[in-house]
Length: 289
Image (cartoon, helix red, strand yellow):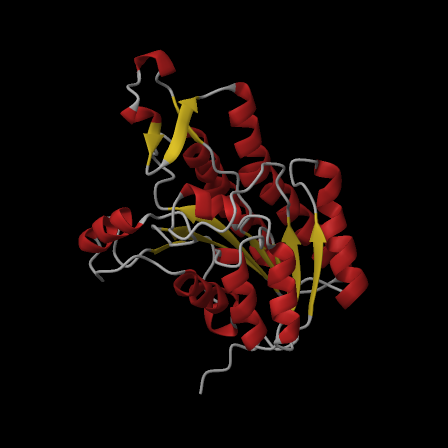
């Protein structure tokens, strides 16, 4: 039997709002290994639709403010979990995640940067887009703006970069020699039409990750990237899911637990010699040379 040696490790996961999302699935997977959890959530200000029955934009939005439900579920299952609600666009909130986690557990061993901002944008003026082109997979598309750019980069690349630096500083000052950082990206980071700010901010996160792996390795901290293909977290409509499954070698769409199992591996003792790597998790959806 393989022992990941994660029992009693403290795992900080950002973006655990959605019970059907990556962050919640990761929390369940680490809890199953006996890890202690510190979850970050963020309640968005939009009015979420009421309990839609079919996957798509309405369902995805309705799930985004359910972080309290995730915490209650985990505690009911016996997991040790603490949480904080914070806007990662505000840099003053970033050290608070570690302050609160250390107050509860004394340290953080594993940092998973999962939180994201997802808004569809394009370089094409809206006046040039047909009505059909103003929505992709059921989500509305708009022309890139300073506000859209800044929201994506603040949450997806700046916050993880500063959280990695804070994680490293505290580890190094305490003289600890073991740490794991796992950053969640997309397999479309290099080129992402209709989600140009999302893709670019993920590409920046990948660069930060490789630099962090090179610099933090001497301190016993590994840094890796999980680049995801399509994962059903409530946003993939039934028709789109069928299309994705037909084009995926393993013939189905990805599930959050598919990702969570890889995150547990990357945090485990078995992954001790892996750092600075980008691992595609998508059932073969993308196969780079």
